[in-house]
Length: 98
Image 1: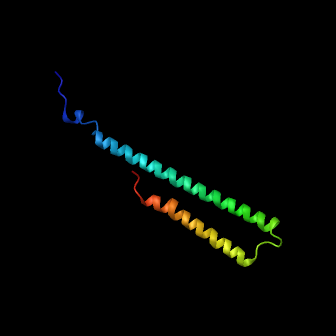
Image 2: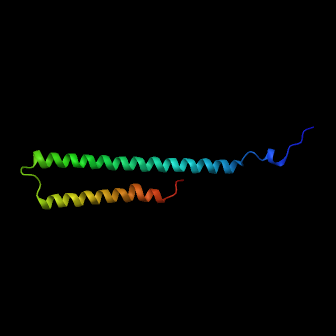
């Protein structure tokens, strides 16, 4: 008759520990995907802004944008990007995923 030792019966983890491990793993993946999607969207917005700005500056507006309008557009762009970084990247990164 074979006897089993304590270490042989304890080779499996508890169900709650396994579920917690899987939840942590999924939370990291979801957070990573959300941050990646937000970053890609931000860069797409940047490229689109530069493309539209260049077309308007070179071909549509005669003489191009004035210095004050360029500064205003830049401030608006920086404001939108700052808001995007705050609401779509920084704030979700600090929150817990349920």
